[in-house]
Length: 478
Image (cartoon, rainbow, N blue to C red; front, side, top):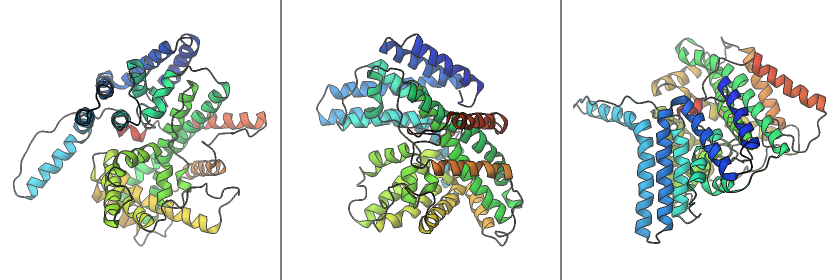
């Protein structure tokens, strides 16, 4: 079920009503109903893949119980290994099997020994990368004794499958999110209202900005060989806002929806295009994935400790794995490696933790240095996005080579004024709100009701009348 669908517009108020007015007196009934609603939400796409969520949930629940019953290091390692094998096995089978098979075949062909094995005709289950990492973090944290395993099967299943963040995050840590299913929840009007504002802003970013950007981006990337360098640069910039509006819009809707049910999800985006260097960008973009790789891959490898060689190695590993997480294509790997190259100078010079505050805090406009830093960082990010969006490495390299041709300084052949104006609205609103949690957050600020409701009505009208062609969420494929 899609957030931007009529189905969800019916589903959400029904679930909200039953949750608060029918089963609210009993916490276990609330959790059971959330679990049922989450399975309906996911099964609406394809009920058969619910079995994968159930398998992951059962395995990691039993692994946690098993670890609580033994103190022997070897047994705990074997239990953790079982969790890793099952979860990564599911992920590898559905997401990477054909990718590695194709590269294996190509390697043999280049060596003069062509083979013709059969691939698997399977489709990628929606959200498998997200809930797999969520359940894995539970098993790893229990193994590390950073949390006590839960014995409540219902709460654990509800934690794994909570529908607002099930298919595209945020990737929640059990230590933060699982305890919320054990606490009595009461309806808080202020939280619900701000949640609705966050949902509304997420819908604007997705339907008005991202979906309209998609039309322009699809045309330019599909026919890049016929366009000028200036048009291709414009296409890359528009894609940067498409993917941001699409993914952060989903996150806003997910977090806002969770707040309607008295649940708090982790912030996943913090206005990343206002970053002053690449390190800051990665602290603000897809935060829950970045911190997941940091805590469960980068730090166990040694992190930024030790020799420069180890720091360089760990940086390339973390970014290449992050790229591969996004999809079974070499373009994603190169996108990750390119970001590693951007990040390395900051790490080696000890400047990767330099910009941890809000840019231009306390002032309306950035100074010239901050503006230059944001421009350079955004430009580097845009160039990397070309690899993320391109269908192949050849297309990405061809696209970039045409950008840096003699036609770079010509007038773009495509000048989508309506799309650019929507992007402009997005930038202005989020710049004004850059110190807050989301684009419509008030944080105690008093705005006259006439102005406030005028803004809400304007956004609703924009969603209804300026919305794009109903594009699927980009991150559903990951």
